[in-house]
Image 1 (tube, rainbow, N blue to C red):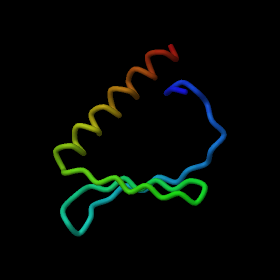
Image 2 (image 1 turned 30 degrees about the horizontal axis):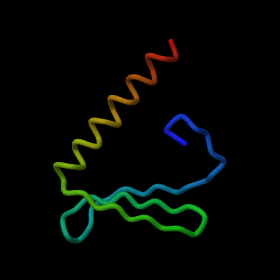
Image 3 (image 1 turned 45 degrees about the vertical axis):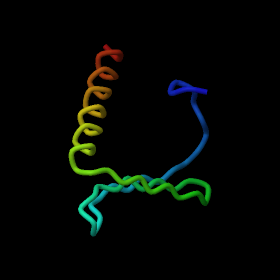
Image 4 (image 1 turned 90 degrees about the vertical axis):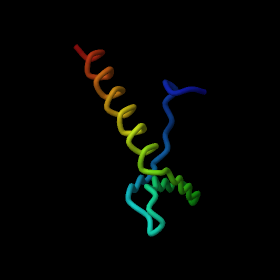
Length: 62
């Protein structure tokens, strides 16, 4: 399995700041909860990766 393998799973993603000054990505699917905390600099790096992936995906659709 890899990033291009499709799955029939429904998940909920929430993103927000924590009381500890971290950025939390909270994923819930099929009764499993995955909280992932990142410091703000790491969160910015992840946001840049998401933007780059979105740009690459747009380019593939053309």
